[in-house]
Length: 168
Image 1 (tube, rainbow, N blue to C red):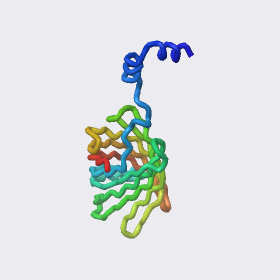
Image 2 (cartoon, rainbow, N blue to C red; image 1 turned 90 degrees about the vertical axis):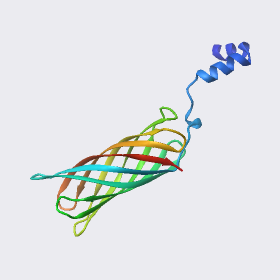
Image 3 (cartoon, helix red, strand yellow; image 1 turned 60 degrees about the vertical axis):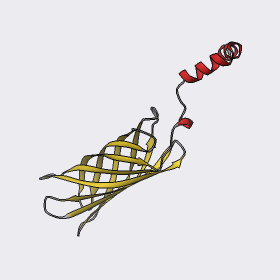
Image 4 (tube, rainbow, N blue to C red; image 1 turned 180 degrees about the vertical axis):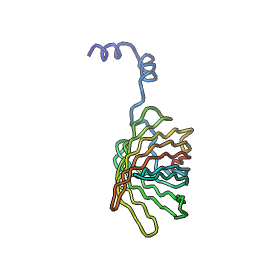
């Protein structure tokens, strides 16, 4: 109540200075429909053998609840060490945390489907990432992800993605 009284007595110039110094609320943040293009590296940790994969992919995210929740759908492509094609598909709910207009960390999780010719796997994943916006429409994304996949046995996986994010 004292702060309100001081603000009223201080005049318009002082209130303008206070507004500049105050952190921007989430309502001032630029919200995006996003498209991400990037490279990915994943490792599967089997009981008897490990497999490392390099590939790339595309993902998109759309706001579901303004400034609170987004849907992220990602499709990657990997060529396995055995010469097979692997197509993982994620459908994650993503919770952005607005640090500033240019730094947007997030946590995401949800179901994951891996299509490997003859042996599809279903499971789930958890991701921690950050969108680093270079401007209103272009940025860089860095993401770490952990998955538990299986059909007959459960396989832990871990990996990371880096790439460009385009705000649409």
